[in-house]
Amino acid sequence: MSAPRTVFDKIWDQHVIRTLTDGRTLLHIDRQMIHDGSNRQAFDAMRQMNLKVRNLDLNIAVVDHIVSSLPGRTGESHPPGIERIHALRNNSHEFDMEFYDVNDPRQGIVHVISPETGFTLPGVTFVCGDSHTATNGALGALAWGIGTTEVMYVMATQSLLVRKPQQMRITFDGSMAKGVYAKDLILYLIGRHGVKCATGFAVEYAGQTIRDMPMEARMTVCNMSIEFGARMGLMGVDEATIDYVRGRKFAPKGAMWDRASAQWRELATDADAPFDKEIHIDCADVKPQVSWGNSPQEMMSVDDRIPDPASMRDPERRASAETALKYMDLQPGQPLIGTPIDYAFIGSCTNSRLSDLEVAAAIVKGRRVRPGVQALVVPGSMDVKAAGEAIGLDKVFTDAGFEWRNAGCSMCVTSNGDVVLPGKRSISTTNRNFEHRQGPKSRTHLASPATVAASAIAGAIADVRKLMN
Image (cartoon, rainbow, N blue to C red; front, side, top):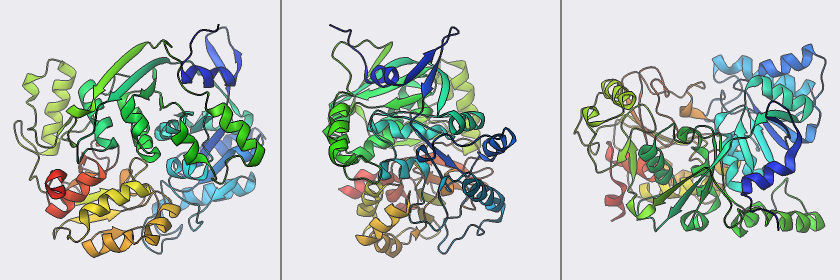
């Protein structure tokens, strides 16, 4: 009998082309998404070396990072982004690559459109020049972000030299309380264990709580694996995974579907398969989470008080906390509830899918955004936008005082015209709260769509559970 294996090992072993003497492995790469943010140099290198894309069916380009989200937007709506958008458009046409342009109904954030089109499938290796590619691991894929040079390698060879990471399993068990969502679970994990805990690891998320989650919630958990320090995050395949993939544009059809789905059902970790590290989380302990500093590990339950850096044993975390409080204009012992906000943002590859928007809409329906707060909803794809409009979410949000935008990364990266002004405070469904992340001298609090929606109504950081009551 063969030794028990993890789902990571099963997928990895299927993709090994050769193991080198220096310990690196040449892996076949099944899928790659290319975006407008940082990949022009990859095409330049292809051109200089007179290379062609090895497999056009396995590479898709899309505009998402630099494109404006404004109504009626074009590729010229945000002048600083024009050059990069035109470059990706021209390069895609020159290399005959499938390209989702600004006005294409398939356009959206790479990590949203990959699963929703079925371009990501269980068991594949998937890469993109963006760290949050780990999102796709929710479908039982090995998915990770790569650099620009590696983007070129994959286009030219459909393979990549990598080192096999260690493996960690995080088991989520217990019932999630009212007002607690997938975003709260991953924020709680990072806040409790830190941003370096998973450095060098591929993380598998497991446990009954994960199995009970719908697929889009699983994507939120895998998305922030990078903020936990991991190389990638993934989950085993189950019937929910297969049901999600069935019928999507790039999913197998007919007899090929039958063969593929039978193989996918094998992509679960065997009993007694070994891990290098294990963590267990009791979800009953988790409350709605909000960040207070400039790192995702600077996290607290919404009804707690900001910790005192002097109480922190780790000198590095203590110094980071002291700097963060000064930047965020907050004090130790201060509650976050009631802290006034200037912006509320619902979007990004972490929380811009239809289910995220539905959760937020349920909170704001029949209520109004507090005057003085700019509140934005930016769907993760034009398909999500159309689906939301079909069920009236756009009207719910606009009636409440939110702006209903077009798909794109928007206020997550501020390279597209959507920014938080200096010294202003934002509560956001994004994945990073670094200094200047949402704009120069901006102040960002990370939270779930429900908490962001409740805070927009209150005009200050709020406990969504009170609105739900």
